[in-house]
Image (cartoon, protein in one colour):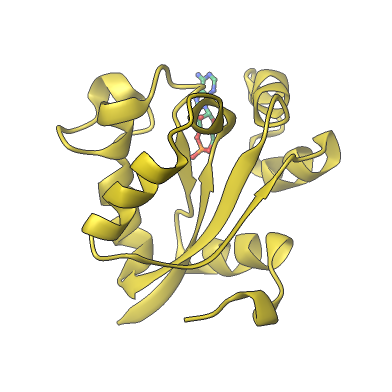
Length: 139
Ligand code: CMP
């Protein structure tokens, strides 16, 4: 089934000028980038986005990192896009990520792990709506 998922290229990716390199892996995996913009998240935006993690010990560090530089927010389209992108990203901790995945190729640590992808279709819809209007998604 063709679906959409939400993706973020995190500040460690933009800092190292890896936007194109990560996008090449996404596209080679059969996902289409149907919306994309580079933004600098505010603390309020990052705090809202990661609200489910607000009780975690790393929450402050996570918000600080996600606001430390520009990010690229994206909508990806493809067959089973949510699950497909999670495969392509690899495990949250790059030490556990499979060969060829984005995190194995590029991520530096569990905190600075290059990309975010939605974990369900329901969250994908909520996350996409936080950053994009329908008019900005062009499939
Ligand atoms: P992400 O998919 O963006 O969603 C939550 C993020 O929390 C996750 O990726 C990691 O980057 C981050 N995270 C998870 N565990 C830790 C940790 N132990 N320390 C710092 N950040 C973490």
